[in-house]
Image 1 (tube, rainbow, N blue to C red):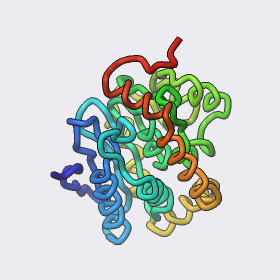
Image 2 (image 1 turned 45 degrees about the vertical axis):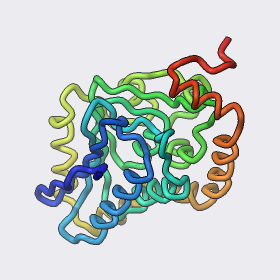
Image 3 (image 1 turned 90 degrees about the vertical axis):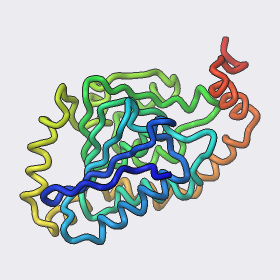
Amino acid sequence: MSHLAPPVHDRGVTTLTLDSPANRNALSAGLVAELADALEACAGDASVRAVVLTHTGTTFCAGADLRAPADPHAFVALMRRIVALPKPVVARVTGHVRAGGLGLLGACDIAVAGFGASFALTESRLGLAPAVISMPLIPRIDPRAAGRYYLTGERFDVEEAERIGLVTLAAEDVDDALAPVLDGLRRASPQGLAASKALVTATVLQSFDQHAEDLIARSARLFASDEAREGMTAFLERRDPAWVL
């Protein structure tokens, strides 16, 4: 079963579509592997100037697939691949983004989201923490906002996502908003795009290179804990975990 729709190529822009709506495009091992392969193909294709990452269904990405999670090393490698890709990756979001999905979004160079989108870092409510996704998120978003949403797990809307730097542009019509962005990318030279992207992603890549192994280990310890088992079980059973007051 494929987790990605067939890629669509249009004048130098390749669109990759997360297409696993049954589990809200959760980060399963299959989805992570297929997306990594598709990005690798885009990197090696001289006809591809930029990549658009979008989704089917009402959810861009629900975070980790709790029933069939991806290996954390593979997910970290996927996020780093997006950041290091010598071609811009543009997120097109018209639905909800949760937990690890924000890491996928944060790894993209540009993100345009519709007014119907919503966002939440729900890890703390499951006995977990946004550990590995901190690498693309912390260098990009407002520190005070990170402090709030990392801790509370509150849901926030697209205008707040734009204000804190998670989203580049909030738009009523996502495709209208994307049009000048994609036009600009098509007008840029491949060398110019690669060199310019390297400048703005240097700090993010440094975070991956310095902290990846520590954060993967920290995430694994949390996932193996009693609290996390209770949190994930409660989530799957649609009930409050034992610690809720």
